[in-house]
Length: 454
Image 1 (cartoon, rainbow, N blue to C red):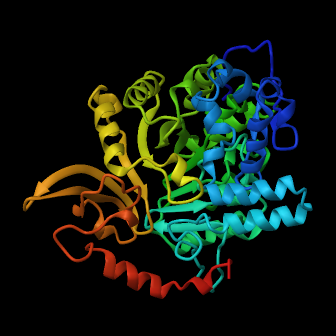
Image 2: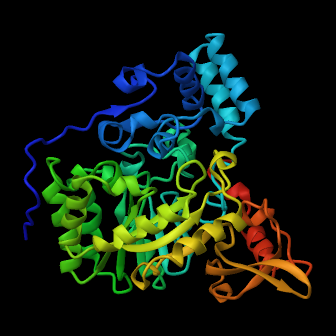
Image 3: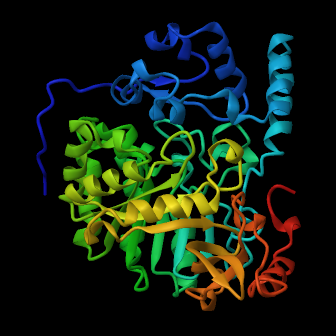
């Protein structure tokens, strides 16, 4: 079935900006040489890519350097620690050869915890014949992550993204698998899996013909345990024309329709980091187009200093998402990787922001959960703070766990206003968190030497 959306007299063509050409952006030309050089220093370590939609429609160039979409997209000096910044700054000022600059960049990157939460060591699944599937992750019983080799990039890069190693030429850090048949075989061997999450990069960077091959393989295999297909993507906010005017926009929507026509639930996991990303008519029309295929759009974002650490903004964003038929799903905590020191919001403050935003929206927006940390043991939800035995504590629980029995079990950490992540917390009332022994045993069973980094 074909769905019609607003007729667009101007069908924009995607234009990408990287370190090679970002100085050609008219608005960037107006910035100081010092600022442009700072971007180059940071952009030689952390990934940088923007596009004409973000530059022309989402950034308020009269509000530089404070505009949230500008900070989100363009490298900022503070994203590197001073010692790392100085190291790359000296390399560029001394006009070192390209391979020397790359070597220095990689040395810095390896100090930034490039794959947090045991992604490389603990989450890589194995077929019964012993084949390691480095293009997949299986951390939680019901859900399998799949990283198609054709989706290892994005329309534009989020500077906080924990998948940043895939965008900076560190090929050994990529999760990629070309053959959907291996995915099918793994699903057949693991009948506890109900959900496949297409991720990347961004799966919606793929042409519809390529994405369709993966979907067709899954559908034709008629896997009885497969109930839900999820797509993790920022395409709605960074390039809505993917579903409006791109040459394959209709055929991509037809792929979505094929999924729902075959009785599977299609969950479109849309990343919206700021209310401004919902400000254009193109994104509203793209949301309509995706929803008309039978897909449900769920929205999520990390809480980010300098960008969205504002309860009022979150409340407005959730309310507008509900207005357009989207389901607020998660507020995440920035992962312990990359520029966490720049974007991180302490857990106590994160909870305060979430509580204030959550308490000011209607019940329809209270589907959202957070703040949530995707840590090594699982998704840890900060419930709040309390007084127990005359001790102030942070109350937490698992929303997902490596052991499903951990889910919804509350536990307590000593109150710490500066803690950014689970590893920063100390147990309260006990000597260790209830899951620690089991987690340590799990790590012993999955030693690091089994990872492709070795």
